Length: 51
Image (cartoon, rainbow, N blue to C red; front, side, top):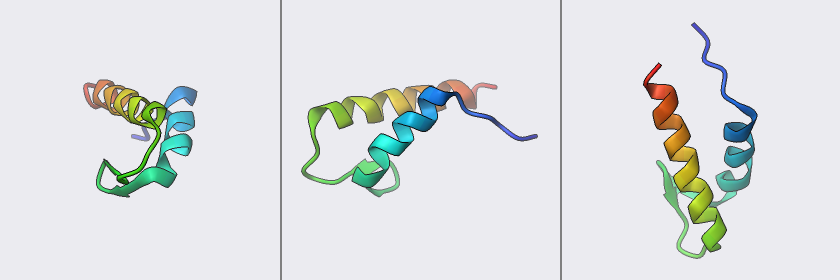
């Protein structure tokens, strides 16, 4: 079974991926909006994990 993500998940990933330095961890110096986007990204992934 292939899981397809929404456009929102893909857009968030594209925006936050340059700032990720480890497994779900952000670099030390990131804008606050990126922190919020990572939080939303993790929420969406948790919702997908329920399926």
